[in-house]
Length: 187
Image 1 (spheres, helix red, strand yellow):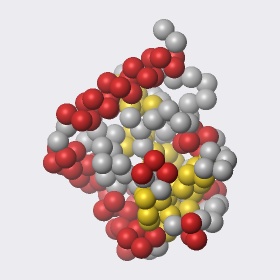
Image 2 (cartoon, one colour):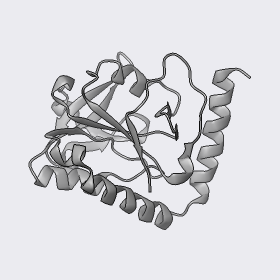
Image 3 (cartoon, helix red, strand yellow):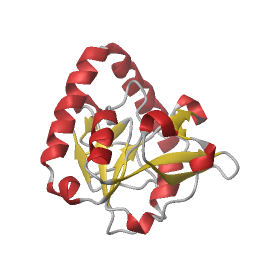
Image 4 (cartoon, one colour):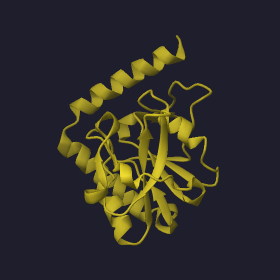
């Protein structure tokens, strides 16, 4: 089977599973993942962290993002540039004030805040995904934004995939343009 067709089949199956998990169950699983991250030495020692702003069906990183800001960590989030179809890292200071609904309905920095953050200054990136496998391969939503972005990030920057337990498989379909994460954190 064609890799593209396999990926679409996986996406469809995972999206169906996500719909079947209640908001409360996703909240509980998100809380378990966040507790693991709080104990993680890479996260605890990171000075600059790139968070994703979660969709309703994704591991909710919002509380951890707010806590990181209160502890003085540099917090960066994605901004999707429609002009060049690229994801850009942008620093924020207050999610309530700095984030508004943007591309694909995902909250992103207000336009006046959009200044590229130097990705070589990052220590850790949290990467969303619909599915991951044991080797760190990631299946995103199919637009390639994170894969293109991660190619620009130095190898020394740690990349963590965050996923609910049912989103992790022995293997998933991948192709040459897919970028892996260093570790997958799950409940």
